[in-house]
Image (cartoon, rainbow, N blue to C red):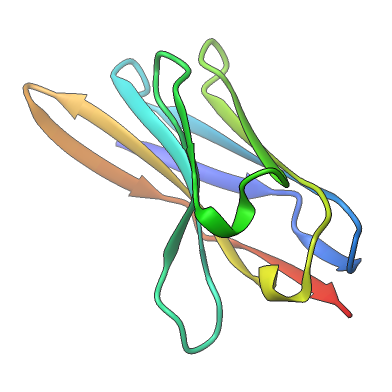
Length: 119
């Protein structure tokens, strides 16, 4: 089992910045990909950014150039630096951790952290 805990959400004005952090604990030896997703009211959960164990990153189109994902594999943490925030970035942000064991991927989610961007 892996426990995933996010922190760093909050309230910010448009154009501002926030930094989200996520820490995984428990059976973390086989962590593979880590990432951030978000879900706004009435919308489906969508990918924000992901990072592989090798450091390869991917971003959702709406955040490219504004958000940066980083990872400390030794500490099992992943961060999301969010700059130039827009009201449409308002959502609950979830950290996702993939653990690969015996060719099976187990997915663990955090409880989510609220990000609110005012116009």
